[in-house]
Image 1 (tube, rainbow, N blue to C red):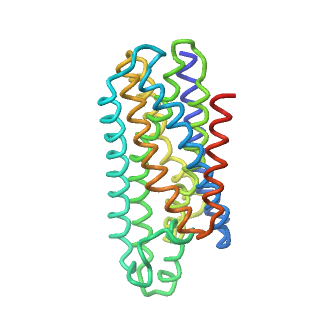
Image 2 (image 1 turned 180 degrees about the horizontal axis):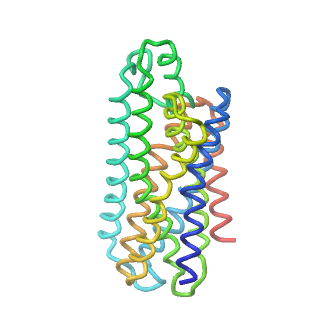
Length: 285
């Protein structure tokens, strides 16, 4: 029970705290912060890559230090985790782009700036009266619901990471690292929810609170991941494989593309490498 409650509190900080912090940051939004966010996203991507490759996948192949799992099951688990997160993100992109009617040749469907990533660059269109503010508000609600659902498998990643040390009752360092980087990853997601709500007319405090609530399903996912990961070696291997695939999509489908698009420089790549080395130090030191 102690381990369960520890996982719940840590996941709450990563899920609710991360998205809530993004909501607070959006209330104090600065338009010159794209480079900082780019470096943070790259660093988080590097740490995630280390945790996946040197911790989660190795534990999935040799769960509990026992015999090797059928490598085919690990591959299938990784691909399934990747597909689940990719599908949820495709749904988010489709529905939010559909709601914001003025995305056109002048508003490309890429996160080439922090404003584009959080829909803040659409505010001028609504404020000018050419587009109804209600459409941006509705886009924020759709994104809030989609990201809330998206956070369930992310919570499973945290729970599965902690399941490795469940037998000893100790908190897995890999789980702690994964909770931290997912919390960091949730900050721009929280901004992506809060900015359209604020621009659509919602009070800043209410928008930040609603944004924080979208992180709550992460806790449910963590409990599910922890439960599945403690059912036995095979279940642990499948849970860790799913977690690895989900995080690989987050790294290569979200974090790195967004970071590079927001700042076309060599420094995001350096930040990613520093993140990988940081992950190695945390895992093996």
